[in-house]
Figure 1 (cartoon, one colour):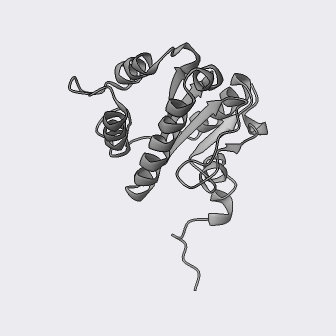
Figure 2 (cartoon, rainbow, N blue to C red):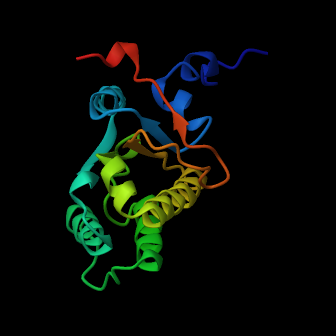
Length: 173
């Protein structure tokens, strides 16, 4: 029997967010322009977009400072990777840095290549932490994506590949 209230999955699977999330929560773009076209498309789907210029992060301390200030982490934020993991879990659970009235949350990290060249282990760890918390977000009904611009070919994060993605055609400026 046909259920008029059932979602139209064929139509949803064509949406940009579904195309991205079906394979990974972390996607790589070759440059900031491609990253921007994708964030424009996701903004049209009512995603909350957090833009960061990771190319300006010279070290771990600067990364923590930028993330904590922008996302309004609490004053007791520990400024280390364990604390980042805890804070991103809070973002996934809508405690701060996110908005339950939106479709989901996107972290757009422009200039991730220079940051990766300066601190490759840290750059990889940040993506791992994000991927784990994005998976948690999906379990609580909060889609989260991390989009980076970098030519660097990252190993898998969260047991899924960091895919080189093409920007959506419909989101062209």
